[in-house]
Image (cartoon, rainbow, N blue to C red; front, side, top):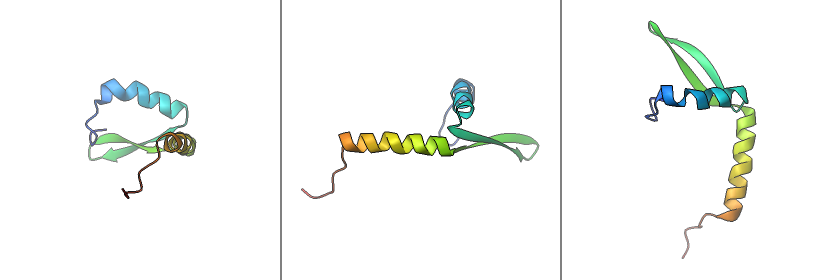
Length: 67
């Protein structure tokens, strides 16, 4: 989240909800004397993303670069 510039306190609820719905996975890792959370997309999240992107691409196809 720090890479994206997001506020952890404000977005924690959203991330917790996504973890509970199995859309993303959270992993706790030691980082020196601290611990950090790492998130990655879960299989359920990948499926949802593909479904959304397919429908979006159908509505708004990408231009092929030729005019």
